[in-house]
Amino acid sequence: QVQLVESGGGSVQAGGSLRLSCAASGLTSSIACMGWFRQAPGKEREGVASVKTFGASTYYTDSVKARFTISRDRAKNTLYLQMNSLEPEDTAMYYCAAANTYPCGLSRDYDYWGQGTQVTVST
Image (cartoon, rainbow, N blue to C red):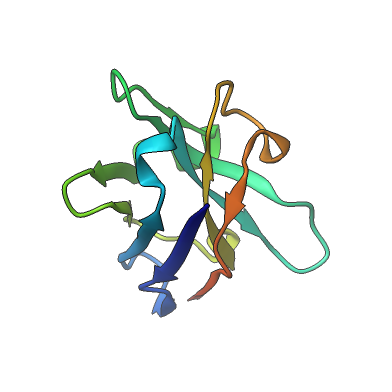
């Protein structure tokens, strides 16, 4: 089992930055990849970014490319999402997730989820 706890959400103005953190505990050696998802009110959950354990390759959804950066500190068992140039459209609940096996593209691929942290971007 893996436990995930997100932090770092908050309210910012458009153009601002936030860094989300996700602390993982438990059987972290089993994790093949980790990712960030978000869900805005009335919308489906969407994948934002993911990173593989081996090779550290990353994936970003088109709307956040060049603005968001995903990283993972394996020594600290922590996943990060640096979010710059935030836009009101980024407002959502952000979730950290971990998968034991590949692929890691869709939410159904992930085995463990955090409870989420709210990000609100105002104009």
